[in-house]
Image (cartoon, rainbow, N blue to C red; front, side, top):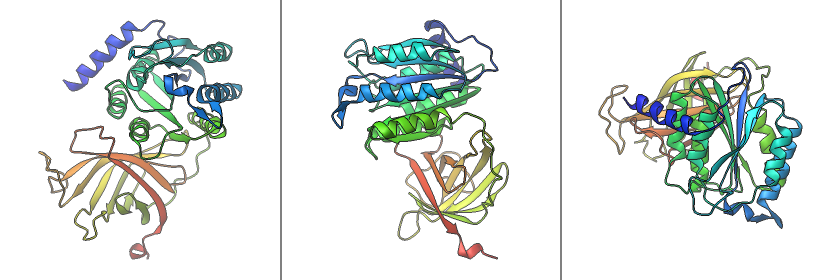
Length: 344
């Protein structure tokens, strides 16, 4: 019932949009969604953020070979209007000149309807029928009473192969905006990249623009026994196969009362060598009792962890039970070496 409702709402959005993408479904298709809210007139190093964004988009287009591309912006027409979202360049081939001209003409004014813009971009790309990618550039949090984190889960569940890569431009780490944007990317298997100035924004856009290009993937490293320093204590991988992972985490409490396990399905991404875990965590004691038990306990939740190509870091999110989309549930880790206890 829930999924039918989601698909119904998305279908309404698609019907309301104009010029839906209808090119060869074998071609990669991407929509660039650019923040043109009033905050983009803020300055970095004496230069307006919108001017920096124009230059970064221009540089991205110089090397673009990621297939059909379009442009959407929000907040550029009216103040205080959460419906101020517009497709400025329909998705298609050879659109670089049109995108440059339209980005150059943007005049930031209004709100930051991140969720509605990404939803409309997905609908434009016919994401329920074909592979679709959105690249979002935002300098702030959602201001239109919506949850980008939860939206990521919706689009991931309803799409054929939907991905949202996000560039957080001049975003403070740990802020609400930072958590929202990271979660949106993580919940769709996309990348989140911070950018603090002109050079970083340029590199960030180049990075996410190339994320879907086919790459030669290294052999998957031996993961069993690897130990990560994480935001919830140390995580040790006890089992890793081509499609499954299991591990134990020490927990953040000094007495180990929040220690537990994490396990689930692993998906290998041949495009960039990353690997995503989607599963659940369990622990003996927690502040939440879920109705359905997992792994012999009622204290559990869902988890998504995305490991980089070399498996030296991961970023991800957890939620209590099946509630979904809790932006405060970030889970990050850095490899510190093999677990001495598992050495042969």
